[in-house]
Image (cartoon, rainbow, N blue to C red; front, side, top):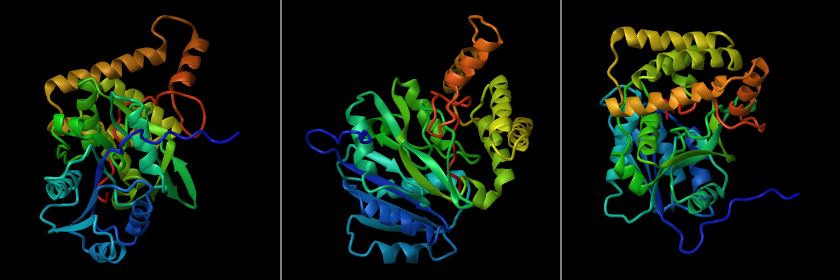
Length: 340
């Protein structure tokens, strides 16, 4: 049987723009640029922001965008450390170059992402069939050790590496907010859901991430600690964070350490009194979502251990091509990291 394909956007094609923030990405950008230039439905404009790279990132971009007048390179000085907030400021600089353009969608694309030639055509086709869909993107496939590993993520959350926004949604939420510890992508989708918009990872649209998420600059173990810190910045419900950590300890290598380090990062950030990334109303909304997810997972209405196990299997998305609807840490960000 032929693979089903999302229909292209009917009628006149909507216009979309892209912004990529890059710091010390070098040759990784080659695949990213090649993928976007090959699109069957190219963007109206794409701004690549060199965020103070110490390597030849700018040179790589110049060599590979030659002849494409719809791609602009912007260079920033390294005026701040390579943290998550720096990415947001770089994206804002890129968006400033798009003022005056008329477009319908705006996407952020990390500098180490490779996409198929019909990726954006198919993604915008999904928006066409879902008028309340505010943010969407493909599922990350992390490439490392000679293999591709699909990232575990909830159906109602989108990695910041591939977020595409309806313009009206992006403007309504105030764009991306700088968050030093990470989670700017989660803040955006939480604010969108609060306003009644849907958020969706499209599992039928894999995008390839060159290397493990977060690990290149911070190391695989420290990356889990950083995720816990970011969760505290988002003011995750403590009980929900315990559940998230337990889940990660069981399903995500390095087993046990992944969950323990995530919980340790959360506790450490709480002890330091980390500034919240969300206002009080948004925190209340997020915790309400998380508590409902927990009740659903444990089968609050009753039933024995078998029922609880079946509910777990139904609701937890391993997302490796198997069944399931949502991962236990639904809504949890997958910060793209300061390396973009």
